[in-house]
Amino acid sequence: NAGVMQNPRHLVRRRGQEARLRCSPMKGHSHVYWYRQLPEEGLKFMVYLQKENIIDESGMPKERFSAEFPKEGPSILRIQQVVRGDSAAYFCASSPQPNTEAFFGQGTRLTVV
Amino acid sequence: QKEVEQDPGPLSVPEGAIVSLNCTYSNSAFQYFMWYRQYSRKGPELLMYTYSSGNKEDGRFTAQVDKSSKYISLFIRDSQPSDSATYLCAMTLRLGGATNKLIFGTGTLLAVQP
Image (cartoon, rainbow over all chains, first blue to last red; front, side):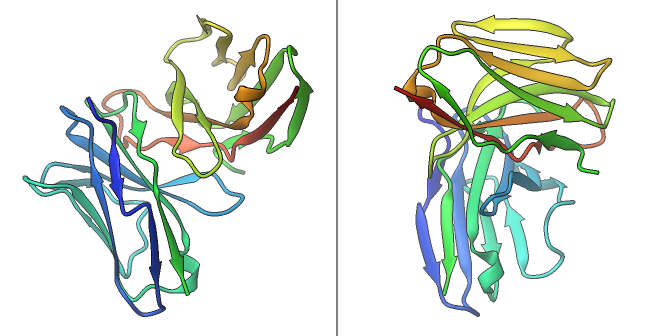
């Protein structure tokens, strides 16, 4: 059973470009969470999704950020018009049920130049 | 005040020492408590998971929860250099709560010296 798969592992974007981060949850997991980790800070919750539904997006910036988890395929975190402050490690986690053990992927490290 | 407070360290100990890592929290609604280990430039790895007060043991690791004091701990016995990593506490509301997100501490950087 493969773990949570994130790609790409490293992503470099120029200011103003779009960043797309992908997450394939563990087999049998229908709950996906995205977190952002800034240097010297802990992980901060961004969004919680189930298949085709956004359940909790209270941690998502109101502008430029969006997330989806379609019926088929991976969950996507999309950042439009990236700025330098978006540079961070973005982690995806999945769980079989809400409020139960969440297993994390290896993260995507976004660098905005 | 942050919802979860964790001493960032760094904490340096000799090999074989007992390590104590701690977090305090302010929200008494938290019911599920986890400890994650994160190696440099890797994703967090779940170490321990508990939902009740008391102790839970797994090999060299013991997780302790004191809900009355809003305090959780992770003890590592016979620490090894391979335990050198950042340890993150995390917690969340009870099942069926209004939110399902994990609230993390900032992590404690541990270095075990050979």
